[in-house]
Every structure is written in C-alpha cells, then in structure tokens.
Length: 132
Image (cartoon, rainbow, N blue to C red; front, side, top):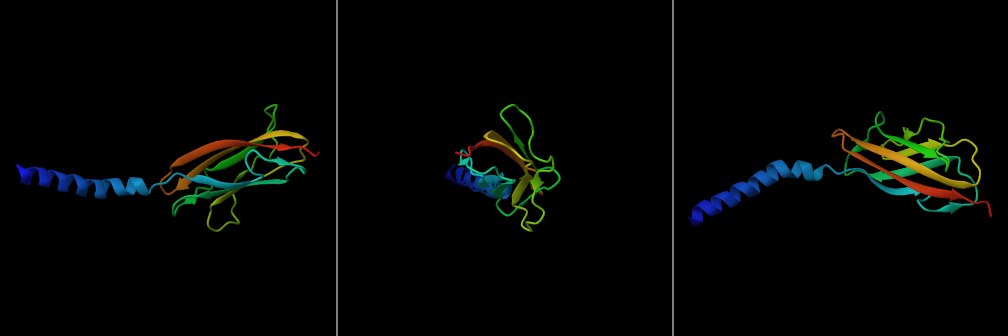
C-alpha cells in the first residue's frame, strides 16, 4: 500500500511540474508605473500619458493592446492611436497622446495583451489636472 501511495504522489508531482509549470509562467501584464501617476494631481496638462508594464519575459502585443483617455463627461480626449510604444524595443510601455485638455479629472483605460500567449490584463485609473 505504501508503494501505491508513493507512486501516486510521485506521478502527481511529475504531472504538476510538466503541465502546471507553463501555466504558472504565463504572467499577466502588471502595470508598474504611469505618468501621470494614478490618483495624482498635476498642475500642467500632460501632452502624453505613459504606462510601464512587467510581463515576465513576454512583450505587449501591439495589435491588441490599447490605452485611451476620457474626460469626466465620457468624451475621449486622446488622439485615438494609443497603444504599445513602438520606440520601446522591449515592448513593455504604452503611450497615448492628448490634445489640449483643461482642468478636470481624466480616466485612463488600458488593455494589455501579452504575446505569444495572448493573456489579457486591463484596468483604469484617474488623474486630475488642477492648475492651482
């Protein structure tokens, strides 16, 4: 009986290592930094919003990742081209360019799709422009 239990445990551990490890290594993108920072108040309206991610050895998929900025009335205020910063050779940053914006609170919405596995992470944060 002891040998049967040992064989079962050994088989279970081997299967976990073989089949479970690749799943464990597939990490969703994690937002590590943004400018303007989430929850921050800035005096000068930004012209660009940048987001930095950690992906565990993968890259952001430029075709499926996106970032957009919205004002408090639900109007989109970026240029509509927000996504992976193609100047970043590591493909770990996203960028959105803003038109002229005034005082107020803005919502950043992002969707980060990693390649090659296609795992998706998404989120939102706000920042406020208050000149004084």
